[in-house]
Amino acid sequence: MGKISKYLEVILNAAQLAAVLAVTVLKKTKIYLEWGRGTGKSFILAFFMKEMVKQMPGASFALVGSTYQQILARTLPSTKKGLAVLGIYEGYDYVVGKNGAKFGFAEPIYAPDKWDNIIHFSNGAVFQLVSLDNPNSGRGLNSFGILGDEAALFDSEKLFANVKTTNRAKEARFEKATLLGAEIYASSTPMTKKGRWFTDMEEVAKRKPKKYAFIKASALINKLNLREEWFEEMKDEAPSELYYNAEILNIRPKEILNGFYPQLKAEKHYYTDYDNDYLESITSDYTKASFNSKQDNDIDKGRPLILSIDWGTFISAVISQKLPNKYRVLKSMWASQSSESRDLEDLINDFVEYYAPLPNKVVHLYYGHDGNAKVRKGTNETYGDVLVRLLQSKGWTVYDKSKRKPVAPHNDKYILINMMFKGSSSRYPGIEINEQNNPDLIIGLERTEASEGKNGIQKVKKDERNAKKKQQHTTHLPDAFDIPIYSIYKDLLKPEKEYWDLPTTM
Image 1 (tube, rainbow, N blue to C red):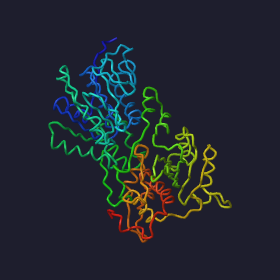
Image 2: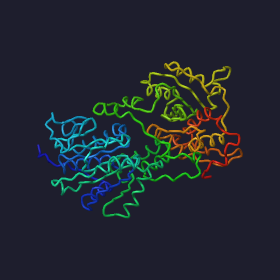
Image 3: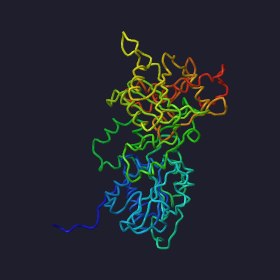
Image 4: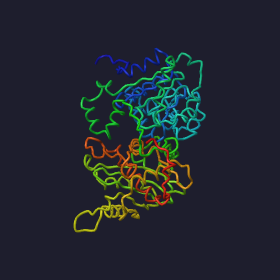
């Protein structure tokens, strides 16, 4: 048997090498990586995690996510995988969600108050899992460095207050460490307005090149490490061309100026509300099934759910609740009958499984005019009736709110919903949207165009008729979003419909 090398050979692609050189050779400490999926973000974050741990034994660091759910479901699994490629293994070199002292691990310089959200390495270094949806998540942390995954989803103000201000720790023994105080954030290009802070850092890097690096790359730079057919598969399977261009090719989406929802503002209407006590309780032992409605802290368990369905070969579902002077959008789902062998029953099964923990299984059902079409000739049964029966068979009490209801005018929906978004009159309840549970809906809302028709403002729905367009980011989910809002609140519209009071970009 030949001699076994104690060194692990790692081959970096050009983007990964540029990130490493920016830190090790150019001594930059603020690194922003706008990389498409498949470029190697997970590996490079694991690489920098290993280097931080190696350079600064016993030091405390922050691994940041927009939510704790994101960290558990996406960041942590990919980080573990990257560490394993580097020869660093869970249960031997590090433990998650517990103190490794009983395994003989060294103690950190600054011991945490609790270990539920800690990665503890054998040399005493620790990474605290910091979620920006918890204002206390980063409090008390004396950090020697920061890593951030999916940074385009971050709230930049919370990032500054909860994390960046903790990156101040200093020890004489670490003064030669190239990663002391380093901040490294990686993300694919943002597809919503909230992520603009991340791409804005490119201009900061141009003004201050000695400290900042902003490195852009698409998955094409990593072709040697990806299957030859992967790009074609991703193009075929991506939710939309927009999604493929942004997520894989790192092409920033163009902003929609003439939108159907001009009063929708990310900072005003999006919120995050996870039950982090529940999520932290499953840190060291979770499965996909753990991420059900138990993780949601925004459900009023004493009120019925509102389930809205938009029918067609692409079926959209939006789940909401009507609260005192407020309309809250909890979650959205979809199924594409034409391409993925999924149908309405699959979608309802997803709904039933996700909300199974709720004690109050009552739903107010809304749907578009297609739901009032008869299933077949010679019967009075409608598609809505079939849906009611399906939900009832799964243990839900159903109130059909759309049976024999007429089609809602686009212009009236436009006025009503934008007045509710605008929020300048107490006459109109506000609208809140759970950002983490509605990613496709939000993209659809922000990218739904409007035009002037013979009956006023109407949606531009051309992409629904384009067979080459994947439908998750067209107007289907926004249509399902509109249906119950108009049905519940349409009587609030004044006779003159307040055309004069609604500023738009039209």
